[in-house]
Length: 277
Image (cartoon, rainbow, N blue to C red; front, side, top):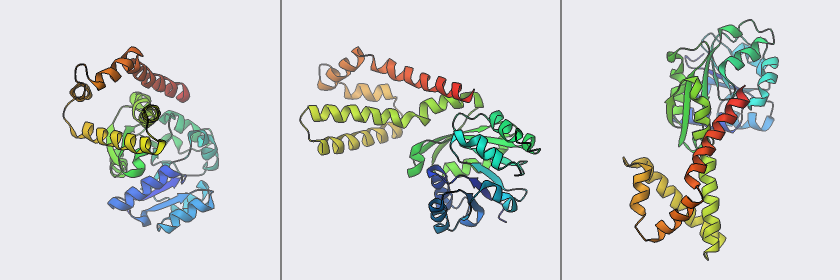
Protein backbone atom coordinates (compact mmCIF):
# COMPACT_ATOMS: atom_id res chain seq x y z
CA UNK A 1 0.00 0.00 0.00
CA UNK A 2 1.15 3.54 -0.70
CA UNK A 3 2.47 5.62 2.17
CA UNK A 4 -0.28 8.09 1.40
CA UNK A 5 -3.54 6.23 1.11
CA UNK A 6 -7.04 7.55 1.60
CA UNK A 7 -10.31 5.66 1.84
CA UNK A 8 -13.21 7.96 1.03
CA UNK A 9 -16.73 7.31 2.29
CA UNK A 10 -18.98 9.13 -0.16
CA UNK A 11 -18.26 9.90 -3.79
CA UNK A 12 -20.11 13.18 -4.33
CA UNK A 13 -18.99 16.23 -6.26
CA UNK A 14 -16.62 17.49 -3.57
CA UNK A 15 -14.98 14.06 -3.24
CA UNK A 16 -14.52 14.08 -7.00
CA UNK A 17 -12.96 17.55 -6.89
CA UNK A 18 -10.59 16.46 -4.10
CA UNK A 19 -9.49 13.34 -5.95
CA UNK A 20 -9.07 15.11 -9.28
CA UNK A 21 -7.00 17.77 -7.51
CA UNK A 22 -4.84 15.12 -5.84
CA UNK A 23 -4.27 13.39 -9.17
CA UNK A 24 -3.43 16.68 -10.87
CA UNK A 25 -0.87 17.72 -8.26
CA UNK A 26 0.47 14.22 -7.61
CA UNK A 27 -0.33 14.55 -3.90
CA UNK A 28 -1.97 11.12 -3.83
CA UNK A 29 -1.91 8.89 -6.93
CA UNK A 30 -4.94 6.97 -8.18
CA UNK A 31 -3.56 3.81 -6.58
CA UNK A 32 -3.68 5.54 -3.21
CA UNK A 33 -7.45 5.98 -3.25
CA UNK A 34 -10.46 3.79 -2.64
CA UNK A 35 -13.99 5.25 -2.70
CA UNK A 36 -17.10 3.74 -1.13
CA UNK A 37 -20.36 4.89 -2.69
CA UNK A 38 -23.64 3.02 -3.30
CA UNK A 39 -24.25 4.86 -6.60
CA UNK A 40 -23.04 2.70 -9.50
CA UNK A 41 -22.64 5.69 -11.82
CA UNK A 42 -20.44 7.48 -9.33
CA UNK A 43 -18.33 4.36 -8.82
CA UNK A 44 -17.91 4.07 -12.59
CA UNK A 45 -16.71 7.67 -12.74
CA UNK A 46 -14.00 7.06 -10.13
CA UNK A 47 -13.00 3.79 -11.77
CA UNK A 48 -12.48 5.71 -15.02
CA UNK A 49 -9.89 7.77 -13.09
CA UNK A 50 -8.10 4.59 -12.03
CA UNK A 51 -9.50 4.70 -8.48
CA UNK A 52 -10.69 1.53 -6.76
CA UNK A 53 -14.27 1.54 -5.44
CA UNK A 54 -16.51 -0.35 -3.06
CA UNK A 55 -20.29 -0.27 -2.72
CA UNK A 56 -20.37 0.26 1.04
CA UNK A 57 -18.22 1.83 3.71
CA UNK A 58 -18.14 -1.45 5.60
CA UNK A 59 -16.33 -3.02 2.62
CA UNK A 60 -13.38 -0.71 3.21
CA UNK A 61 -12.06 -2.77 6.12
CA UNK A 62 -9.61 -4.87 4.03
CA UNK A 63 -8.22 -1.68 2.48
CA UNK A 64 -7.32 -0.03 5.78
CA UNK A 65 -3.66 -0.33 6.66
CA UNK A 66 -2.47 1.38 9.82
CA UNK A 67 -1.54 4.58 7.94
CA UNK A 68 -4.64 4.79 5.74
CA UNK A 69 -6.60 7.95 6.39
CA UNK A 70 -10.39 8.15 6.13
CA UNK A 71 -12.22 10.91 4.28
CA UNK A 72 -15.84 11.46 5.30
CA UNK A 73 -17.41 13.06 2.23
CA UNK A 74 -21.12 12.43 2.74
CA UNK A 75 -23.91 14.91 3.46
CA UNK A 76 -24.04 15.92 7.15
CA UNK A 77 -27.43 14.29 7.66
CA UNK A 78 -25.90 10.96 6.59
CA UNK A 79 -23.38 10.86 9.46
CA UNK A 80 -25.37 8.60 11.80
CA UNK A 81 -26.23 6.18 8.98
CA UNK A 82 -22.59 6.02 7.87
CA UNK A 83 -21.44 5.48 11.45
CA UNK A 84 -23.91 2.62 11.89
CA UNK A 85 -22.89 0.99 8.61
CA UNK A 86 -19.22 1.42 9.50
CA UNK A 87 -19.44 0.18 13.08
CA UNK A 88 -16.74 -2.40 12.32
CA UNK A 89 -14.36 0.10 10.72
CA UNK A 90 -11.13 0.54 12.70
CA UNK A 91 -11.25 4.26 13.44
CA UNK A 92 -7.94 4.64 15.29
CA UNK A 93 -6.53 6.84 12.54
CA UNK A 94 -6.79 10.32 11.04
CA UNK A 95 -10.33 10.98 9.85
CA UNK A 96 -10.74 13.97 7.53
CA UNK A 97 -14.30 15.29 7.62
CA UNK A 98 -15.88 17.76 5.20
CA UNK A 99 -19.27 17.51 6.91
CA UNK A 100 -20.56 21.05 7.39
CA UNK A 101 -21.75 21.75 10.93
CA UNK A 102 -20.59 18.41 12.36
CA UNK A 103 -18.12 19.08 15.18
CA UNK A 104 -15.24 16.70 15.74
CA UNK A 105 -16.79 15.58 19.04
CA UNK A 106 -20.09 14.92 17.25
CA UNK A 107 -18.29 12.71 14.72
CA UNK A 108 -16.61 10.74 17.47
CA UNK A 109 -19.90 10.30 19.32
CA UNK A 110 -21.68 9.11 16.17
CA UNK A 111 -19.24 6.24 15.69
CA UNK A 112 -18.99 5.56 19.41
CA UNK A 113 -22.76 5.21 19.71
CA UNK A 114 -22.61 2.16 17.41
CA UNK A 115 -20.29 0.35 19.81
CA UNK A 116 -17.20 1.12 17.76
CA UNK A 117 -14.51 0.68 20.41
CA UNK A 118 -11.85 2.49 18.36
CA UNK A 119 -13.82 5.74 18.01
CA UNK A 120 -12.10 7.30 21.03
CA UNK A 121 -8.80 7.01 19.16
CA UNK A 122 -10.00 8.95 16.11
CA UNK A 123 -7.90 11.97 15.20
CA UNK A 124 -10.50 14.17 13.55
CA UNK A 125 -9.37 16.78 11.05
CA UNK A 126 -12.25 19.06 10.09
CA UNK A 127 -12.18 20.67 6.66
CA UNK A 128 -14.57 23.22 5.22
CA UNK A 129 -14.11 23.75 1.46
CA UNK A 130 -16.28 25.94 -0.73
CA UNK A 131 -17.67 25.26 -4.20
CA UNK A 132 -14.91 27.05 -6.20
CA UNK A 133 -12.67 24.15 -5.12
CA UNK A 134 -14.27 22.39 -8.09
CA UNK A 135 -12.33 24.69 -10.44
CA UNK A 136 -9.16 24.92 -8.36
CA UNK A 137 -10.03 28.35 -6.94
CA UNK A 138 -11.41 27.33 -3.57
CA UNK A 139 -10.99 28.67 -0.05
CA UNK A 140 -10.71 25.91 2.55
CA UNK A 141 -10.44 25.99 6.33
CA UNK A 142 -8.52 23.25 8.15
CA UNK A 143 -8.91 22.42 11.82
CA UNK A 144 -7.22 19.95 14.15
CA UNK A 145 -10.28 18.62 15.96
CA UNK A 146 -10.80 16.00 18.67
CA UNK A 147 -7.72 13.84 19.16
CA UNK A 148 -5.79 15.50 16.33
CA UNK A 149 -2.51 17.38 16.51
CA UNK A 150 -1.35 20.13 14.16
CA UNK A 151 0.91 17.62 12.35
CA UNK A 152 -2.19 15.59 11.46
CA UNK A 153 -3.24 18.37 9.07
CA UNK A 154 -0.32 17.70 6.70
CA UNK A 155 -2.08 15.51 4.16
CA UNK A 156 -5.27 17.60 4.28
CA UNK A 157 -3.19 20.71 3.53
CA UNK A 158 -1.71 19.00 0.50
CA UNK A 159 -5.09 17.75 -0.72
CA UNK A 160 -6.94 21.03 -0.43
CA UNK A 161 -3.96 23.18 -1.33
CA UNK A 162 -4.36 21.70 -4.79
CA UNK A 163 -7.90 23.11 -4.91
CA UNK A 164 -7.11 26.71 -4.02
CA UNK A 165 -6.05 28.44 -0.81
CA UNK A 166 -6.18 27.06 2.74
CA UNK A 167 -6.21 28.55 6.23
CA UNK A 168 -5.71 26.83 9.60
CA UNK A 169 -8.36 27.71 12.16
CA UNK A 170 -9.37 26.67 15.69
CA UNK A 171 -12.61 24.70 15.74
CA UNK A 172 -14.55 27.54 17.38
CA UNK A 173 -14.11 29.60 14.18
CA UNK A 174 -15.28 26.92 11.75
CA UNK A 175 -18.90 28.13 11.81
CA UNK A 176 -17.73 31.69 11.20
CA UNK A 177 -15.70 30.45 8.24
CA UNK A 178 -18.74 28.63 6.89
CA UNK A 179 -20.79 31.82 7.10
CA UNK A 180 -18.06 33.78 5.35
CA UNK A 181 -16.47 31.49 2.77
CA UNK A 182 -18.65 28.38 2.69
CA UNK A 183 -21.78 30.39 1.97
CA UNK A 184 -19.82 33.27 0.43
CA UNK A 185 -20.12 32.22 -3.23
CA UNK A 186 -23.92 32.42 -2.87
CA UNK A 187 -23.62 36.06 -1.77
CA UNK A 188 -21.68 36.89 -4.93
CA UNK A 189 -24.18 34.99 -7.08
CA UNK A 190 -27.00 36.89 -5.35
CA UNK A 191 -25.29 40.18 -6.20
CA UNK A 192 -24.94 38.96 -9.78
CA UNK A 193 -28.69 38.28 -9.90
CA UNK A 194 -29.41 41.86 -8.88
CA UNK A 195 -26.92 43.31 -11.36
CA UNK A 196 -28.33 41.20 -14.19
CA UNK A 197 -31.87 42.26 -13.33
CA UNK A 198 -30.80 45.91 -13.28
CA UNK A 199 -28.95 45.56 -16.58
CA UNK A 200 -32.07 44.13 -18.22
CA UNK A 201 -34.19 46.97 -16.80
CA UNK A 202 -31.59 49.40 -18.18
CA UNK A 203 -32.09 48.05 -21.70
CA UNK A 204 -29.88 44.99 -22.25
CA UNK A 205 -31.13 41.61 -23.40
CA UNK A 206 -30.88 38.81 -20.85
CA UNK A 207 -28.01 37.23 -22.80
CA UNK A 208 -26.08 40.51 -22.97
CA UNK A 209 -26.71 41.21 -19.28
CA UNK A 210 -25.45 37.75 -18.27
CA UNK A 211 -22.30 38.13 -20.34
CA UNK A 212 -21.50 41.64 -19.11
CA UNK A 213 -22.13 40.92 -15.43
CA UNK A 214 -20.23 37.62 -15.39
CA UNK A 215 -17.11 39.22 -16.87
CA UNK A 216 -17.41 42.32 -14.69
CA UNK A 217 -17.54 40.29 -11.49
CA UNK A 218 -14.79 37.92 -12.64
CA UNK A 219 -12.48 40.83 -13.47
CA UNK A 220 -13.28 42.69 -10.27
CA UNK A 221 -12.63 39.55 -8.21
CA UNK A 222 -9.23 39.06 -9.82
CA UNK A 223 -8.41 42.72 -9.23
CA UNK A 224 -9.37 42.43 -5.57
CA UNK A 225 -7.32 39.26 -5.11
CA UNK A 226 -4.25 40.65 -6.85
CA UNK A 227 -4.24 44.08 -5.21
CA UNK A 228 -2.69 45.05 -1.90
CA UNK A 229 -5.37 47.75 -1.55
CA UNK A 230 -8.43 47.16 0.62
CA UNK A 231 -11.87 46.51 -0.83
CA UNK A 232 -12.92 49.95 0.45
CA UNK A 233 -9.98 51.62 -1.31
CA UNK A 234 -10.74 49.88 -4.59
CA UNK A 235 -14.41 50.80 -4.34
CA UNK A 236 -13.59 54.46 -3.65
CA UNK A 237 -11.22 54.53 -6.64
CA UNK A 238 -14.18 53.74 -8.93
CA UNK A 239 -16.55 56.13 -7.15
CA UNK A 240 -15.97 59.61 -8.55
CA UNK A 241 -17.82 62.43 -6.68
CA UNK A 242 -21.08 63.22 -8.46
CA UNK A 243 -20.57 60.39 -10.92
CA UNK A 244 -22.58 57.35 -12.00
CA UNK A 245 -21.03 54.95 -9.48
CA UNK A 246 -21.73 57.33 -6.62
CA UNK A 247 -25.37 57.46 -7.66
CA UNK A 248 -25.58 53.68 -7.47
CA UNK A 249 -23.66 53.41 -4.18
CA UNK A 250 -25.88 56.08 -2.61
CA UNK A 251 -28.98 54.02 -3.38
CA UNK A 252 -27.33 50.91 -1.94
CA UNK A 253 -26.18 52.71 1.20
CA UNK A 254 -29.64 54.16 1.78
CA UNK A 255 -31.00 50.62 1.57
CA UNK A 256 -28.44 49.47 4.17
CA UNK A 257 -26.84 46.98 1.82
CA UNK A 258 -23.43 46.89 3.52
CA UNK A 259 -24.79 46.27 7.00
CA UNK A 260 -27.30 43.75 5.63
CA UNK A 261 -24.54 41.70 4.02
CA UNK A 262 -22.49 41.81 7.23
CA UNK A 263 -25.54 40.72 9.24
CA UNK A 264 -26.12 37.90 6.76
CA UNK A 265 -22.62 36.52 7.36
CA UNK A 266 -23.24 36.53 11.12
CA UNK A 267 -26.66 34.90 10.65
CA UNK A 268 -25.04 32.12 8.61
CA UNK A 269 -22.49 31.60 11.37
CA UNK A 270 -25.24 31.42 14.00
CA UNK A 271 -27.20 28.92 11.93
CA UNK A 272 -24.10 26.77 11.63
CA UNK A 273 -23.72 26.82 15.41
CA UNK A 274 -27.34 25.80 15.84
CA UNK A 275 -27.01 22.92 13.38
CA UNK A 276 -23.84 21.67 15.06
CA UNK A 277 -25.58 21.73 18.43
